[in-house]
Image (cartoon, rainbow over all chains, first blue to last red):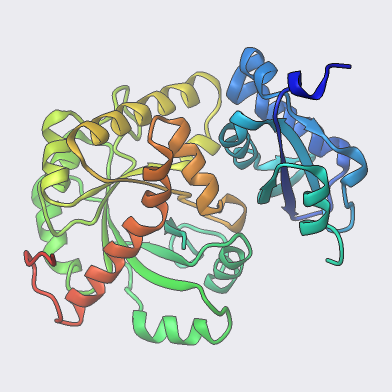
Length: 113
Length: 237
């Protein structure tokens, strides 16, 4: 494992899915990857490095967290806004906020809400 | 404060009711939406509409916008004189170069919508953008065009949008992004649309401004004009 000084800075995008029908987690992951690759391409996607924090996904509220490189937050926002269908359900992925740590993402958007 | 100045309800070409659109707007953090109807459809009484809606969906400002879709420049001029006294915001359906140019040359127009629609070029050149800057006509970046297109077509549309943003930056014209939504699933948060503008070549600060202060100012100015508090051509310092 790289020492923390050499690790890439990250940001955590907290989002909620607003959809006609409840969406499956795997469909959401596929939709995000499909949108990332079609909009940004494989080369830039490697720079963004989107990563789902699986154990933070709230299936009931359809709320989750995606990790990405700290300087590619705007790109990820655009990628998420370009998703219009997840699985077979029309959907909107709404960004609730951006945090610098998982801890603050949990505290602000998951605990007690 | 974010605004989306182009959404359609079931009263025009949309699917959802006004209340549903306003409710979604509130959920995704929009402070105001402009409901667009095509001229010469019945223009609802905005003041009554806003008051009745505010009692149900607090905090969402509803603006009445009218879209002109003329077949020629002469028809556009006639439409402007009929629609302007009734509309809070007046838009022109772009795509035809002559109409794009005539719209930007008229100070009565607030926004030129999707100037690149159905074209191979961006629909705007240095002459049109100069006129838009002089007459305070805003150029629209319509997000629905991106959402509903694929592959090469999507890429071409984004390329045209980039050109328009580059021209607007150079000639200091105003550009804003709208969802162009025809249903609640087409609506997007102002911050997301600002991120999209940023990726298309606009400075992040300016793109945030384009989604908040620019529309807010246009709405305020037009409402003052409608109420007779401000005269056409008078610029506030």
